Image (cartoon, rainbow, N blue to C red; front, side, top):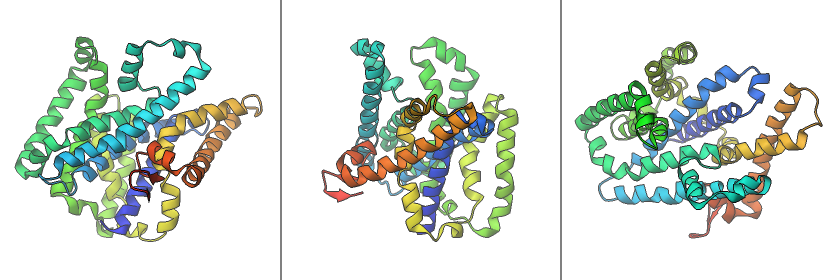
Length: 339
């Protein structure tokens, strides 16, 4: 992978995470960005699932397939467990009802309704990753990949959209399946790109105009027709592809150090965003007059503080940061290497 494409992925990740950051903040209403965040937040998740599928299957072969899948226990389940427990303790300190939760309720919430709400993405990605070695021979073959993707898309549409209410009503975890299954085609298509469309990752200037125009059109269509569930999902599926093809690689060839500094905390921002919002809302409550100023300031301070905590942790608590980020940053104590 070229340096430009690597930088492009980092910048896209950061931008889309910041949109999700705004999506969870009341500041979006006062900044009049609520409609845009409601669109770009889910599009960000679609991009994350697709790019995660790409990296999972890129370089996978029959000899390392199982090992690559199991590796995600370390990079996904470890930070998932860490932040779930941190948020549970945070709630337990502030709310007596959380100290009275039974073991059964705790375990159910731990896996299916994480105490840190945004962690549902990590657990879903973990499940998709753990079955990746089973999907490998199917996606590796071009014909079987096409047939599988078509059948998968039809199955997801039927189970989660056409008969979504019946799915929810017919089983205890029906609501959870309806929530996570629409993203598995994005994840699998990332594998299709890795095996059969890898050239798709390189974007030349000559291909830009069509997709540069298509990007705002997609956002507008999603805003106008998202209530048509199948069409909204189709636009969600297409959004990472169209957004990716809208900008040429050469835009991202320079500034690697600055890009690294800004983008390295991306995963950490996603994990800790809710707690940062709550803390700053409490700290600023009654000190700043006017809802717009209050919420906007809390949002800005939350983001700045996350960056500060990340880089201080990297300096002072590198092993803890490694656990908190799934060994994407900090120091891996099992190898003694900086990440």
